[in-house]
Image (tube, rainbow, N blue to C red; front, side, top):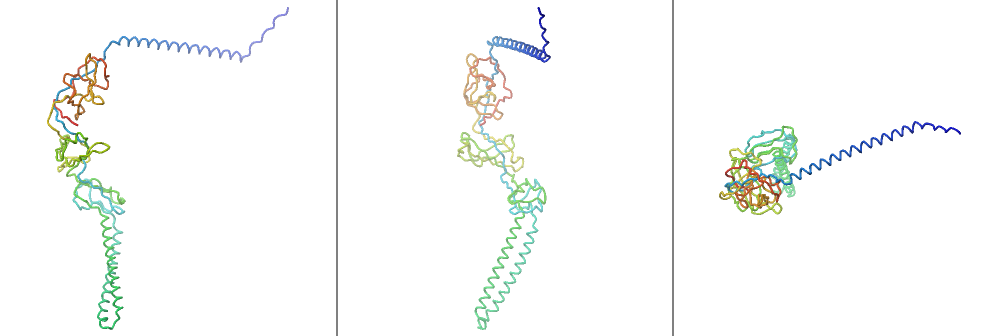
Length: 390
């Protein structure tokens, strides 16, 4: 009986491959076990959170509420806008050139007609000299033609000179006179051009813009100087239809901050088709120069006597003009109110609330219909009196 044949050992490559497969399978097993452990931990945490929520399900959220504060208020109309100068002019040259002199400084007061800026006029001077010479020649030609006409007239009457000679002399005189008139027109044109090289103040006021210096190029139509009359200022703004009914020309207007006062100068009782607002102009005296032109301001126009209203915080008002009040069973109920915004942002309610009501302070964080635990707070910064604004 023959002995069994011995198998040759597996090649090295096969042994390496087997080791790699075993390593991958082992790593995959560890990964799967780790992920299963994480999933089990997450599930346990979720169950714990669910149990905590279930325990708190019977709790009622606490919501800050406030009692409306009774105050007295006088209705006023608020106007906002920019205080513009009564007159303002941006001055530019009508001809091109370079600035030869700046005759005023920034902030200087000027009178009507004062020279502000001048352009280089050397070319104008040369043209003026040339035109003056042309006028001199034309005047000499006129005198010569007149002398000839005066000389020929007695000769023609005496019959010693033909009539056509006098006619020719008179025609030459007419031509010379026309040439003289043309030269003088050119002189006036040069004078006008020369005046175009000078900027003058069109009215008394304050210089609020000047060129940076001489040599600056001047382009026709591009402003180099600005003059503003600040003796009085004008507030141009608009109002809605409701406020328009209580305004009239001549009504007193007070700028907020006790900075000045004025009157309504113009009022158009017609609404813009798109904005549904009407234009209003207020003239404000500024003889003392205390007001700043082109500043944004708020102005107040009183309307009627003071009346009782209820003041609530700005955060208590919801979009659409309603508030959340504590109703039966401590449930939040929406209540539509009639209110006007005060100058500090608070609301002054004239209808829809009573002092016994409790209003949610932060309407955006509360939910209509929710049952709450009201936490009464005191309004901060509430004044005993206020002004009702529109």
